[in-house]
Image (cartoon, rainbow, N blue to C red):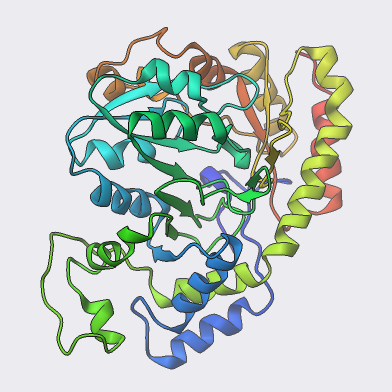
Length: 385
């Protein structure tokens, strides 16, 4: 039995719950019987093949988490000194991975309609020493990639996609996670495909793949050795251990095999919320997500932006009183204690600050029942801001 998100007491409708895919327990048992429990076994290879198929053939490497994938990306790209532009409205890992490599952080604001950065907000945050950008496709809705790519290419910057929310999403028909030099995915228990903790690095710039393998394997060419490409392996570079345990890869392999069904269920729930709550939201002055025409959503999260912090807090309490967990999300990084020590100040990213105070998410997971969905809708409709 999984622990509800945030370790809340049992709820009628948790925010998230892991959905056991068909064949998941059998895959775990097979991995245990095999005796191969460390990384890069047959289930890891199966997952990487399935991910590549979802990403137009882009090679991927499984990692222990989305954070680890970001850290591996920073190891690969962060050798050139300077600054990196990151969203303020994101999880700390997006920024920490690059700060740990000695890069200065430049916080970019979000666009109100998507909670994503844009070419305009990236350019406004950049500095003469900027060398790269790490963007986030918030809630699985694509950033507007064409102007961002034009900006990045014109400035000679590298680009990383934090695609933790974005597997299955697309921009003008092209899968998210295939635009950057590198892209990081997450398979945390809250993500569409989950193995509890896990991640992957998609290597869009193919010239980085051989080095990515070395850095992921403690700085050694061990992967080449196991493929029979060298007769011994040795220490090549300063790397770290970024392999996912094979038992977790077994769980993930079943999740990815069922990914189309997972996405269809999440899509149906997302659209039901959008349709059922549209009139109520207009009356209450609450903004619902409006995917732009270029975006095919990944259906990761259904979020709402309330008029102010007091209304948002009242809604969360209202839902909790009815046994429904509807949490807020990120706190703007530029006004966090560390963000301020790194030079951030209030007013620097006003949209991110407003989203931090006013955004809330509704329960959305593959195993949510029709009864639970209706409970969420009925409870929301009973709220008055």
